[in-house]
Length: 322
View (tube, rainbow, N blue to C red):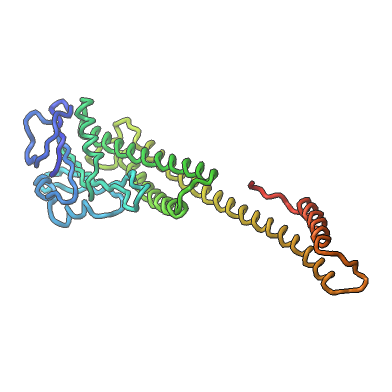
């Protein structure tokens, strides 16, 4: 069921309604209605908006961020805008379907948001607006809504940063669980996809802030949404670099461990040559070779092995990791 946040004539959020509002109630400045897949979108949108099946399905289809201006169905020059933006969520830590795509349909006194799946962020924003009692205009609330979505994405990327820091500590202490490298490689791929999506968001938010959209004069509103989306992009790039450095560090440690094993195998192989040579000499039954018993043989082998071990220990390079 669609949920609507009603703003009174002063622009203060007054109530949340879980029903279709097909008219403007008295003493109402504007209304925000949130929709998701499964809601009857064509029945919720007003008559002045295209309610065809192709239009409503296009609001929910996965697509690149875009801004498009439409002419209303009334006999005048009024327009409405459709803005599609994508926001990374906390699901980036767990699965590939982590992007929340939101389509904003902006009219003079109505704002509709449509998303493919349900998200708690919309209910939280509605509750926050009710509790804070802030005066909004339709445009300032639209900017506020985008800002809240960006903060959600920034928090998600900060959680990624915490995961990477925790994984680095575990890697250095040897406490990582099985399959951690595969999980981090998958996360690196998701961060790459997120950077592509957010980069497209930046282009269209710049277009919004510059005042190029006819019925969205955001240029007059001093807001930080462009700074926040650029900060989000910086976070994604930073996490990608941190993951790359961490994976490279893991490969360096693994290479060092392998070199250490070869180091000890080299010493062991060199030490085994000594008893082999001694055994071969006494095993040839030559007349001029001093005859010694079993214990004498062990003594000679031990002395020569010890001397060889000391020499090899001094000559071979030290392992970098203990």
